[in-house]
Length: 289
Image (tube, rainbow, N blue to C red; front, top):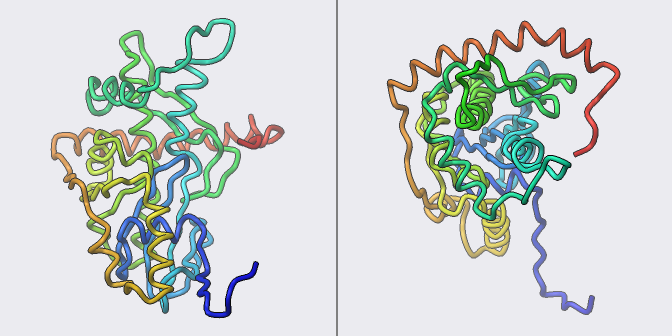
């Protein structure tokens, strides 16, 4: 390439280690949740370990003498894309104009108009199977407990909540893996732009959510941090200071009670429907997305 011998080359990273740095979760046991098309819990830990039963492991990462625990939720923000493309604005014989440019802003506003718990409606977000805390490609999504009183706002909000319930399902084995409670969770990814989703996650998880500044840029920001650290122009300890928090969300007690009951139903739905999903989908594995 005609480069001189003095040119420094820094190895890059795939998305998750970079996103963890971009969110500022670099200290031991600092938790980061990436809420994008899919969703990932990541935690930097000082040990290498694998939890086969919950499909998670700590792997080499961008920081020296550390490992990064990664637990993946197969579909998260992708559930909202499905809602837009297949239910609200499909390109079919019944469809009209496409989704408005401010679709996600309107979607948030509509979801905010529904009460926590959505009148008992629960959404299962397994549109592409699941990876953690169960590795099961045959699970599928579902709206459960619809009635004539169910509104479109209930359905939309239930999607936000269903993703949060699955995140709570992952959090329990993640905390056992780490051997401690993870109190402050840094949230990044495009879904973190939703103030509503941040609050729902705080209420469902019972944890403080730290919404990072410019959350959709966390991965790019982390890649830049890796380059600067590699060039010796900053230290890993500088990352948290440079990754600012835009807003902090704490659990609201009144919503917590509603979500505890709904989360128990979410877990029971998995137990009771898993076998049915396997019978229905054994011959129909998920197609590429």
